[in-house]
Length: 337
Image (cartoon, rainbow, N blue to C red; front, side, top):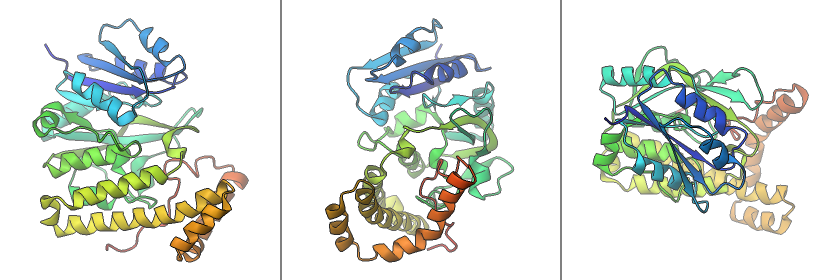
């Protein structure tokens, strides 16, 4: 008999965290599960720790070289046998009742995807500092179906919003297989957003439970702290791809939302192509990029107050979460384009 849920855990050099992730999966109140770990060429003790668990529900797949989180997750997708597929990052963890609660709600709503709110917790902290919904400014107090336009409009790079691309939905495996949906191997950052988009484009029924059962750990060295240039380049390419789809062209609201997102990606890309070389002391490169982006100085001034505020929060007020999750967050968009 196949498991009810396949929990997939892509891992890369997370020896300090993966044990907690695995324990949280194996200790779910829903016991009819399998846990598939794909180690993506780790050079530390990640594999050793994963293999130290003797639970028969656990399977460890080892990549001989690093192929990226998206490709690693795809290996796990193909190996999964569960009715549902749940993704767990190797430095995060689940509340014990998460899978039981979400599967039950998915059955009631006839969902193809179902997510919960997300606890935001800083590495080393004993309790979360907030949740995804609390930080979004959205008021969601009951199970809500997410349509594709709302999904895109509330997940704009660098702006306040719901950012469901950071959530970790459960996916009905039958739906993924039927539509041939996998992660895009070329997207190494922000890949969850685009996987969700693929599902929604195909008509997936997506619901969110406003209670949090997923713990999202922010830590130095994780992808959210790395250079955003690759992510922005990949996001521009992905947005253009979706905007060429007939289903998008026939939906003016969705086309407007994706067009706005693409414009934001491009603006931030141009800005960071100046800022990152400056931080690295590459002045000639920065000057060359300024020549390509004459609006840099006005863009910088528009961001100045929020840049100063974040640094005051971090260095003076000792608010260590001021750069977490949304490292380039600006003021929430006031109007719909």
